[in-house]
Image 1 (cartoon, one colour):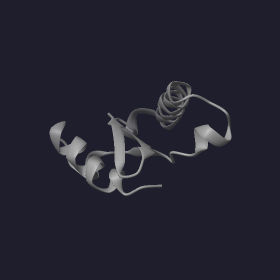
Image 2: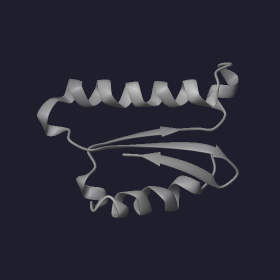
Image 3: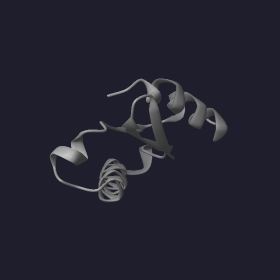
Image 4: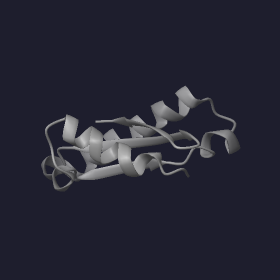
Length: 81
């Protein structure tokens, strides 16, 4: 996994007007996982979103904010909040 999420996650959280302490759940995805499972990047993105939302629902009202980080190669990363 690259180092992209290290800088990208705090930047995305700050852009949303939140602090890292406000985030209840993180879904961190390595770039090669969808390659080894023969999945496309878009399918893996949908899996990450559904996993995060399901887990947030399972945890209940106390879990308000989640961040998904998908490493897409080298030092690039995408974040979803």
